[in-house]
Length: 319
Image: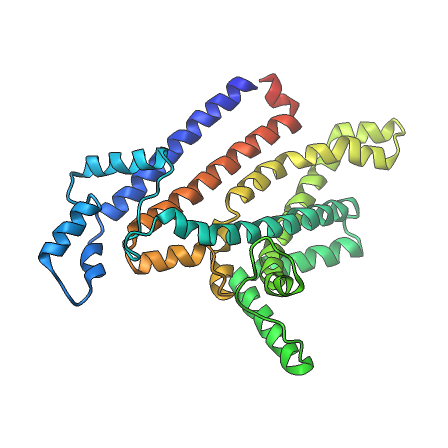
């Protein structure tokens, strides 16, 4: 098992290296000059040269990339082009906790509700419970997250105008704080983000459980006279989790990256707004930093799914 994980970890380090290189190349070969954009309508050739030297943009490409990697290894993300002199890590620190909080609670909803609903639907296949739950999940899954977010905003506005709820439909409260005001800000985006993933997990877990319930060893367990609960939870449930583990691990990696539409529509000051504003302003150090951070999240989510996979599936341990 240790050898397997080491091989996976080395492969993921290579992926991160490729992401850093591609991210750097995109910024390096961009047709626009961020220094000239920084100076706006008051060009000054001497100041431009000074800023180019300050940011190391007058060095050869490989030297710039080496400096970029060395800074990353020292957890130095550089300084922003837009807000001159401000460290990129401070800019990221403003939005990343908000995006992580949004993703964390959304994942709790997706897995905590979606998987049990799918398992129950599989156990009661072709019943009214199965038909209603899978029909509802199909409708939610078919709706793009940004459409669902807009519908929820319309609902909040209608409820506010009709009943005077005074419920906010944009912005975000204090990260990881849960006063009543904070909950009002956070509830709608968390539910919207969690709903689409919940529908996906419900359908996936139902399909996985149905496939396991048709296996010969499940039929054998029933033929031996085991209680149905023992057959479901001792034999079927654990094996049904195997394909779900990979998806859950990848979902952890995409917690932040998957929230871009939600953050934009609800005007949440998370990593999405920082990234998109940086792209608009050609603030390449911030764009590079957010891209690398999101890639690291996906990579380590994948590694986590591999670790969980070995715990659930004994065949991996044997190999």
